[in-house]
Image (cartoon, rainbow, N blue to C red):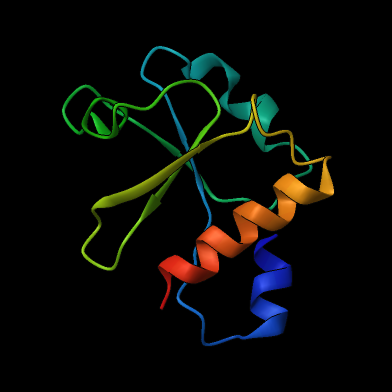
Length: 97
């Protein structure tokens, strides 16, 4: 989706990356294999998951001030469904404007 957004409008300030939960570090190598999505590891000191009140497979959409404006869960909104894919893409693009 990042490449699609970049191709449509390279100036769009949408940046997609993953943030792994504290305690799940052992899966970092596996999740990164064959992917280009930037992947960050949360720490107890940073506590991004706690600050965002994130759950497993949440896409947390932030505004320009890094405040949460929407949470979109990929378990309940499987992106293999084109309607969900389009909905998430629209949410990301709307957040950038």
